[in-house]
Amino acid sequence: MSNKKVNLLGYSLKSLEDFFNSIEEPKFRAKQLIKWIHQKGVLDFDEMSDLNKNLREKLKSIALIKPPQIEEVHKSSEGTIKYLIKLESGSMVEMVRIPEKKRITLCISSQAGCALQCTFCATGAQGFERNLSADEIIGQLWLANFSDKKNSPITNVVFMGMGEPLLNFIPVIESAKLMKEQLAYGLSRKRITVSTSGITPQIDQLCDEVDVSLAISLHAPTDQLRDEIVPINKKYPISELINSCKKYLLNYDGKRSITIEYVLIDGVNDSEELAIKLAKLLSNISCKINLIPFNPFDGSNYRRSKQNNIEEFKKILMNKGFITTLRVTRGDQIDGACGQLVGKLKKSIKGKKLIPHKSI
Ligand code: SAH
Ligand code: SF4
Image (cartoon, rainbow, N blue to C red; front, top):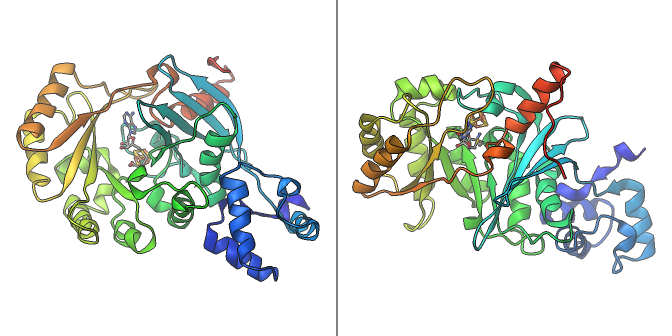
């Protein structure tokens, strides 16, 4: 039956070559197929004109190419689009398309929910459902590029949606390889960022598998505070995390830097003293710092830092020589930070009261 067919959407070039080998077909078929799927957006074997009829029939009997489904589309006035994606199992994840001047960034999910329970995160508040497969991860990029012919192609991908990518290592690697593949999306490593809360064994393994940019969700410069707001810190404390960052950087030329993400929460991690500690902690790491004003959501008692505290925090880091950016909070009206839309949907289903969203 169709659900026993293998879904080829998530196969990297190497995996497709192995697949064709296993069905006694020449290797070059993998290159043809990968271009049809990821450059032309074609899912139907019958439309693949350079595959002969016998091969198309053979493929149809054992394989399919199937992306997940777009369930809802929410547009904000500044052009950000948030998609609610339904997986075959019924789980929901989110992806966000963020157009900027020269680039279009796609924020994708790697897990449905997340087990790590960072105290400021709407995804963490939902708990963990399951890992996404490679086809469900690359399927998000496929949908962003091909589900609507009017869409311009995505130029940058960030694994900053729902879930902890390094706890779903193999599918994340496989999909990142496809993003980089010249015959597929051809994105350079600078255009693919894996964001992690600090799973150090996998940070150490990452560069053996695929060369992508790394973002670390630090959020606190001391173990005492980080244990509280990013609980995985109890398992992988800051000293280990900093060591893994150094190892990552040593693998590459001196030009590489890491992005440090720091969510600013009023009265929790936004004092001048902590800014100074942060600068000291990062003094030997080639990095740039991205400050993210906390995005409030239902059920959280945290508040976004006050504007003058944000400015002061930033100034301290800049004065210490760090390139420091402040993330513009976009898409507030569509529950900007990932996990918030699914969180709302779940709550509304529980309470049997659907909160209407502006859908198109
Ligand atoms: N699990 C990974 C990637 C997904 S979270 C990680 O933690 O890095 C992506 C980013 O969004 C992280 O830096 C996370 O800290 C941030 N984030 C989560 N909830 C947020 C909120 N309510 N407001 C602002 N940023 C948030
Ligand atoms: Fe998981 Fe990242 Fe949210 Fe923490 S911030 S709960 S690691 S998704």
